[in-house]
Length: 280
Image: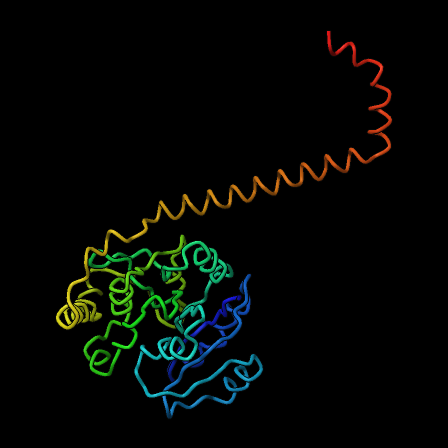
């Protein structure tokens, strides 16, 4: 059965006017999702022009308890446990092949959630909040551990997802592209990326310390990490084999078509008397 592909995001009043810009980049994708889900906090007001846009594009809007960044896609995973959920930020314009890139990798590595960046933290390939693909099964029972206490103690949800996926034996891998570089500069200013400063001051260290204290240290997570060059080589080999197969199929098809032509049959008949020359 074909997996349902869902794009999930959240926003709030100061960013809600980004939604048409962000979603227009999703509607321009080479592979279209089956559904787009927007999770909002109770009491969040949707401006009339944004509401018109959402209705026109049939975006599913859910109002939920305000769990900040955690409502971006955790409620969507819980509501659609069998779907591939691609969570995205509300401040990025995504290249048109993003979903296709994720799904190409997912097809060959269905057991791995996929991150849109190349950042390794604490020996683990890190979930990318700007764009990542996840299924509920990647977290397994650990998805239930995301409770109110955890959400309060862990301001960095990215490291939470990274930790839980690794503990469940399904560590993140990453795409060839880094989608967090596409931040809308006119809305946010310069994007600094994942520096040591951000790791310290964005709550990543605090969040990871809490996870280890409450649930324990991951067991050698690096052994399950699939290195970038390995993925790239495998994908390139797969694509090359596919190209080679298509070229060979076309060659055989063309050759067969030539054999069916009158000119070929006539030429073959005319050359038949001279076969004895080829035997000498």
